[in-house]
Length: 107
Image 1 (cartoon, rainbow, N blue to C red):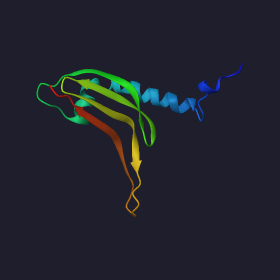
Image 2 (spheres, helix red, strand yellow):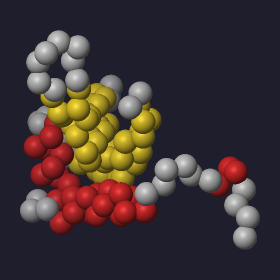
Image 3 (cartoon, rainbow, N blue to C red):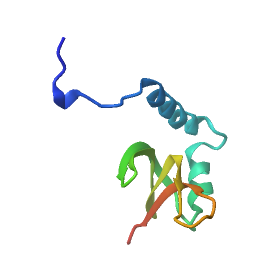
């Protein structure tokens, strides 16, 4: 069987893909579910209600990131499932943080 070049994914690691999917799935099983994760990650506004969380990929300079897109009554927000490490040019230690992007909706 021949693969078309458009279907070829270089450096595809089935194991790492499964781990990423497991991480994504465990968010639903955490106490409080996605609502609590959203509040812990981004804080809350008065009257804000989480409408729909969904798994998605975003493209960054570091490559594709899997994470969760949260859709609420007041904003859209993305948080990566894995840490991104920043290595400054100085001799300081590197810093690892989750990639977070909140967008406030205008009413």
